[in-house]
Length: 167
Ligand SMILES: [Zn+2]
Image (cartoon, rainbow, N blue to C red):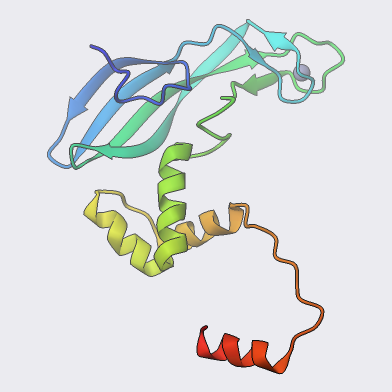
C-alpha cells in the first residue's frame, strides 16, 4: 500500500499495517533510518539496543482521528568518551523528542489557538476529530516564536486616543 499520502514525507517511516475504526485510523509504523546520531556527542551509531512503541497523533484523514503506533529504536553510543551509553533515535524534522503529536498537527492547533484562544480551539478541534485540551493549546502558543515588538519611547495624546478607539 502506498502510504505516502498518510505519513509525513520528511520522516523516514514505513507503514506496516493499519486498522480502520468508525472514529479513527490506527497505523503501525516503523522508522526506516539505518543509523542515527547520539544527541549528546553527535557520534553516528548503527548498533541497535532495543525498540519500543510510541503513540503519535497526526492530522485527521477522511474525518477520522489518525493514531500512529510508531516503533522507535534505541541505539548504543559507541563513543567511549560519551557519558550516554544508550539513546533513542531522534527525528530531525517533523517529530520532536518525547512529542505525542507530529509538528504539522501542532502547527494547526497553534494557528487555531492564536485565532480564537484555548477553549474555542478545543471545541473547533472536535469538528475535525482531534482531542486536545485548552491547556495544551495554550502551551503550544507559548512555544511559538512571536515577532518582537519594540515598545514606543514616546507616546502622544492622539496615539492613546487612537489605541482606545481601535483606529
Ligand atoms: Zn554519545
